[in-house]
Length: 343
Image 1 (spheres, rainbow, N blue to C red):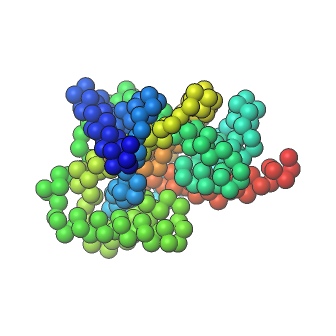
Image 2: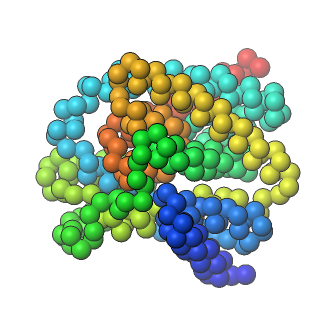
Image 3: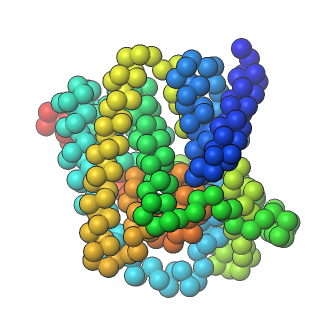
């Protein structure tokens, strides 16, 4: 089957999944519907294919949405979240102490695969580091994709149960109510922020580059609104497809070993996260919903989407995920080398 037909099949399944979620009034229909539809089809052997570079481009609008939310008033509140941010290194340390032995001793993965499977960093970054260290890239891809899949699927259900959050509402104003010039500026900020970030090898370039560039434009008053609801909804669709197609070509052994390991680890991560969330709320450092979204180690793009739709404090949520990823990307390779030398 040609790549065009594979992509058409993928988009047809994604649209069907979104349609089912919309009819059943399930949460995040344009994210979870395509994601689960593509997942099921991939597990059944369907020859799916992601949208490639265009899917990455659509992610840039999430960075634009975050950057547009950062105003001078928000900057003034940054000192208020420092105590909560100070717990992020401890959070990562606990995850590493539990996750590495789990993958190494219980599931029997080699050292680099176990280490980078345990790290709650960005999926692409962990794959690059893991491959350079000689790890199993396919296993890492499935483990991290499963982590993201589980957290992104369960989080909306918990948010609805505990906080009554309506995740079916539009994530912003309609495109008809947004100045076309501002939409053009947002699109340019997303594209050029992404490409500039790639040139300087910034991690998470498709989100962080646009976020930085749009923040500058937001603080200077050039951009005053977030991307329209329709654009954020389209971004959800592509993110859902990207996660779902990770399972294309999966074998029975990979399903038993790698996906099972990812499921077990996701459950453990959720328990660790809930412990920190309870501590943060108990100490009065943040509202429950914001702490919940900040300390769940799902994918950066996926958690940003959920935070936007839930109306959470984007600065608080994104700053915690950003700090988590910075620490992991900076220290994980160094610690891995030390562990190998001592081992």
